[in-house]
Amino acid sequence: MRKNVWLFLAVILSTRLLAQQVTNPPPAAPIAAPSNAPAPVASTNVAPATNTAKQRAESKKSKKSEKKSVAKKQASAPEPVTTPLVVGKASVIASNVNVRGQAKLKSEVIGKLQKGDNVDVLEEILLRKSEPNEPSAWAKIILPASTHVWVHSSYVSSNKTVIPKKLKLRGGPGEEYSMLGIIKRGDEVKEVSTKGDWIEIEAPPEACGFVAARYLKQEPAPIETTEPPATTTVVTENPPVTPATNEPPVTSTEPPTAATTNEPPAKPFVEEPPPRRIVDREGFVRGTFSIQAPTKYELVSPDTGKVINYLYASSPRLDLAQYKGMRIVVTGEEGLDDRWKNTPVITIQKLVVVE
Image (spheres, rainbow, N blue to C red):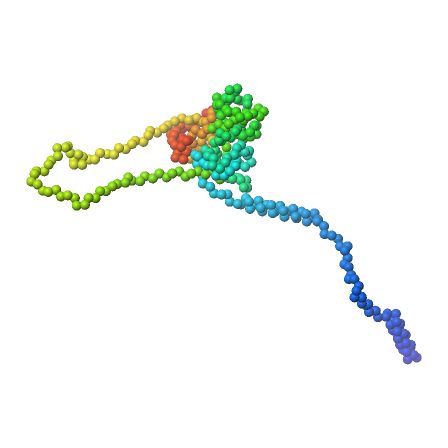
């Protein structure tokens, strides 16, 4: 009985295996494509690359960094080294040099100078902070007569003279233009043209402008030398011999000189120094703009606005900074400095503030 059961089970298993082989045939071999068939075309439905907002922001950022690097290179470029200018004549070494109302590039142009022109330098001004590619050294000059300035017509009389005590010169027809100087009551003006309430006039000697110092050149001052006078020595060959005689020696009847006496030599003449010059001066205290000035403070005339004296405090306890902008009367010794022969220096002995 058991044997029959096992045979029955074996038959069922064998029939199942045969059925699986029939229902699961092996996969067919791939059919080779003919040699003249076209190659498969790649899909063209790929999304194109787009310039996203992030990419645009990065592009702008890179452009800004490039501009900053270029500006930094330009700013770091060294300014040409020039010889410091002093008060006196100077010649222009470039063409179409701008004369400006102030010592900066953003100021208005009031005239032009050509190569070879001569100008009068009043002082050299050094800017502590200058813009990139802007000169730091400027020369304050007297405007040439060919340059024109402007004044308000209400302050000029019919005979072309100044009416008020002081009248400002402007670089253009308006209060917004730079002040170039001051002229006084009674000064005559030479009219060129008019524009509204303003008169264009020839620049008087009081009008000043500014030029970049790199475009000016001054000739060095001649060096004075004191050479000893030339001396000539005469040499005679075989001087004649005077024959001896029995005559008595000839005695001179002339009075003895200092060389033949025992008297002391005369003392050399010594010139006495000039007496000290003690003066009283009145004006406003102002700081100097030039680093080459003999002192840091100057006394300015209340009438003309011009410098009267440079102020020198011999005592360290006298701080002139506290008197800046005040009107004072100063007493002291007045003298000239070798570098500033047009403006004397006063050594303060007494200082009084005017109410």
